[in-house]
Length: 483
Image 1 (cartoon, rainbow, N blue to C red):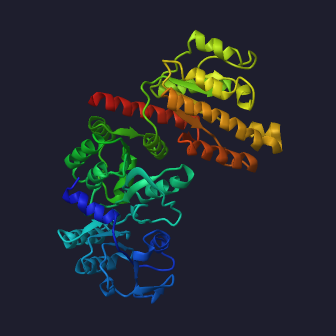
Image 2 (cartoon, one colour):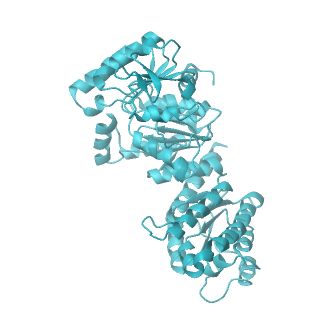
């Protein structure tokens, strides 16, 4: 852990003093950082302002009469080299260059400018970027988005794309994602993906790593870093540019050489990395691995309210490499005691819409969860709770009180399945994005937060829940193969 790269990056993620070069009343970095715990150790640099947000604005970083550890550079590309030179003279250890207009343009001027930047910095200062969002660390107060929660967590994130990094920030609010450290590194003129992988692998605040990558300069070093990181903690990766079209876009986005999809898939597999297919998978799988133990097998039980869903869900599980084993005769006999014969299917998936409306007496969802979690062939239970829209039609203004009683009951059953029976429990709560049913929207969000507060992973659809379980199973296999 006491390696040069760890110490350098630790100083960048946990700086004492920070300067924003190019600060202005409209600048996102200015607004982001002044709202965090680093506000009292923050300096603004912009010769065009005497004050920014009520604070002194310095004409140059050299005019600041205190040491500066880390600087954010958000000025036009033609001024970047001068700003970096001033940072070197100031003794700044690391800079993040937000500015674009370098090699990603594909233009000779941008390529030349990036080479000059690399030559200027070599051996004198560490650079994140250019053409990126930079670093985010709730522990120190580093941020690039005023909407960030700044709640400390255990998920480490490495993104070559700034937009994907922003999605992780917003997931802090919408998906209860809690991040330890995150970096968007763009063109990687200096610090590159392997550096951040090695750092987060050794970081005691990080328990799982999410990676979005488009391309790399040194494939051998990347593979070594992937193996090192994946050998220490779960590493979930999304590769952008796995097709010819995607590769062309990656080249113009971050100046990256993408490589073939098969080459990357092979490297991920051999390195012990869990490769996912899209950004939703990356978010869901990372959250699940940060909060839940992987299941001990691939057997999945689904509790739903629709026979049609039950058929489709079984197909989805099989396509994802999961099994949908039947319940034992004993379990089916127990379930038949309170599952009506009409309009239901007593099997796996269990289809019984009536159970979702029971908030008192016997035969509630908690009873079902206790019975199913006792089945040895079941390793994961997915509860599909997409029925609030129908509850609002039936109960209208009385929906919330009844829903809270039902939620308290099924969450007790979920806790039993997880804590006593050792099962992975996933909850799917679907909300139609364009619904004009405000009660459904409000209650769906309320229920989601209740589940998350109890430590359960909530997915926005059953499909996402099934895919997330499949990635959890894949990670369990990786762990088993290392033993």
